[in-house]
Length: 225
Ligand code: SAH
Image (cartoon, rainbow, N blue to C red; front, side):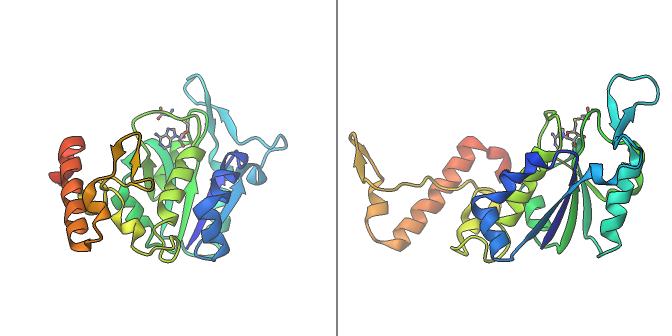
């Protein structure tokens, strides 16, 4: 899979996308991630990428031309399955959406800033708009990092234990069961007996029952889906 991210602040993406699982996925060539600095596509002599909003509103708007040039340059090289804009008014991101994105070959993620981007970019160049939740960030980079992280860990071979991502919360509309590690007892707080029993049939049944109970208590809405 190839992910191209277009941003005015590449520095905000460098650390999140260069550690742990994402770093290893890149090393294993399971994913290629390219960060493109929007300023490289600025057309005026001040390298500007934003301008005052028409209509006299306060705040700056990202201009159409540098964004069009950046997206066109990428599209000239290969087809894209989706050109995503991170936006608080997009569809709300969830595991189902991550699963779908993980099946794609090439995606672009455009990060907004300031008051947002010229609406004509959204009308003519963007194929999908994603929000990571009902709150407003100052830029799309953290949202893009969240999308990339959630997608990359689903690519086959990225997480060493193949089944591990499938047993996470939200797959099957259930929350994950609680997990424990050594010591078996700490300050008198004990690990559930069944987990130490070595009886894997019993353990699996316990995990499933815990998953269902947790979901009922914490996220009953998931069971309606
Ligand atoms: N004026 C806009 C908010 C702009 S915030 C509005 O009220 O809708 C600046 C940028 O941050 C946006 O262009 C978007 O790319 C990003 N952003 C902010 N909140 C986000 C969210 N919840 N999900 C995804 N991206 C978000």
